[in-house]
Length: 249
Figure (cartoon, rainbow, N blue to C red):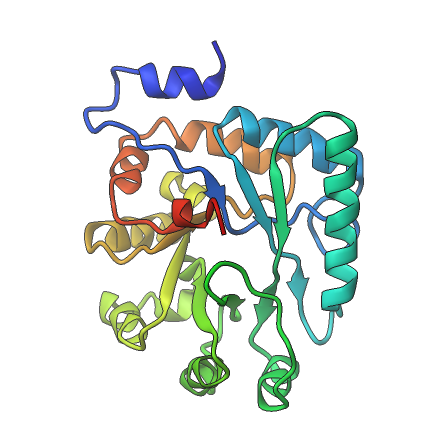
């Protein structure tokens, strides 16, 4: 019996665990960012994700003006190669590619110039900010994203230290009509204790719209297996998450 079967047959969870079938945040295209380095590593991790119950993976390489100057063509070509290798090995899972855009001047320029950006689902656009410093143009960027016809999804808000002053900071952002994507491993304190605290606060307030594994390497998978056994994970899966709505998109 695999991990996935054990999870759903476990009596430890008082709240039944609902399957999350689609991951919207990972770094599984080799050599594009700080994620996996080889196709072999990527395929190994993907097999682990399949064992955890995932049916579709939307992988999201970083695009950052100063560090990861990835383009849509480069990302999509790499994704096609990964899917081809999976097919050759008889590994049955769908791979799509989008991107995790860093809020910097390059990103703002792309929005102002109307450049085509990589999205998934119903024109969802995943973006992140500095972990330490609140961007002075954060609300402007959210408005620009929406003006360009995209729906903004803020990656892992529980990890941004500039929001830790109060839950009201999170609520002010959430009121801008964007979606929050929680990193699942934040529930177990993998990133930090404060990230775990605010992950719980967002969970309590039902302010989580999407979840992601944010997988960069096998250590994230090892932590994910432990996190999925926590009662908080069961509670999370019973909230109104939109991941599974992307299965056939």
